[in-house]
Length: 143
Image (cartoon, rainbow, N blue to C red):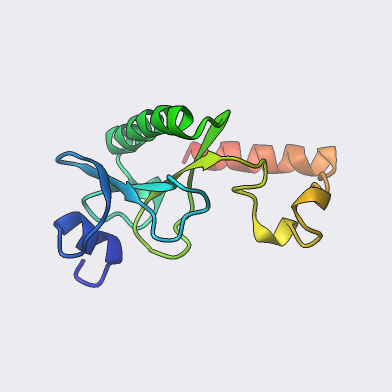
């Protein structure tokens, strides 16, 4: 896609601080990191959502994210590194890999209104509603 930011980075039309590159994927530092080392792993081909990714490509992205996580743990001396897909700002499937120095490094701002030290867990749904949601998702997965 000619107007996709990540397609432009993958093609070399825009610069990036590249951490890993092969024929299918590209990993680079994020421009607006949650923490130092925050990386993005993208497929070079355009897929809008992570669920659109062919399974072997999604696996390749996850394997790269694991390698990045091991390096980040060593460099930043953190206990854990988060890996998640959001797709909020750029409609091109991409995984974030973030060294977590604080337990709320990857928590939604909507849950941090009282500040990170006063974080309140979202309310739990009733067991019956959880059972209904479970059944609906499991049924939809079969289609």
